[in-house]
Figure 1 (cartoon, rainbow, N blue to C red):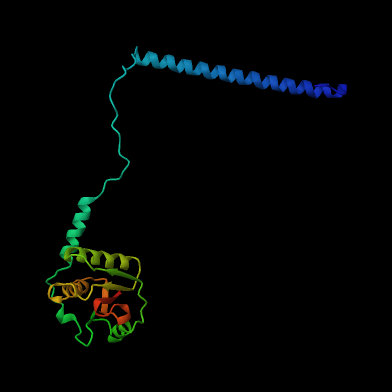
Figure 2: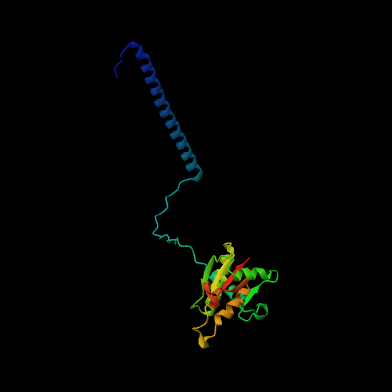
Length: 209
């Protein structure tokens, strides 16, 4: 570094002195730290006594699976509860209003609600199609559908059960079972047969709490 005048010499000397002092202080701090570690090491050796390093072992650490365990037992328990909750032997005939189109409503609900439901005043927000399912499969699928729809805050859903044209004797077995299952669900407030445009005799429009 070239100095242009003698007046710049003193600040330069001061800067060099400060840098040297800082380096000296850093070396002194490092020395004191090393001495402290050495003292602690000696104290530990005096307290513990002579020690030997552990021998290396050939033990293999088991690999831990990152996949979460599947709660199969809980799923089976829930399925059993659902099967027990929806009985095929439930007598639904006394609860259905046998007009030109079968309908159901809880006692506290007025007939105007059913009329509006039948007229399509409620927007259908979700639907389930039970075509092709066995009875146990349809029961569990319907129960799960109603529960999840209610938990999602939905009010109006459609359940397609079919007209039974492919059943033995062309008897709509699933249709009558769906009636029984729905009236046992506390989430269900009412249901009516769907309008022709929404499935007619092969579907129900269900009002949830």
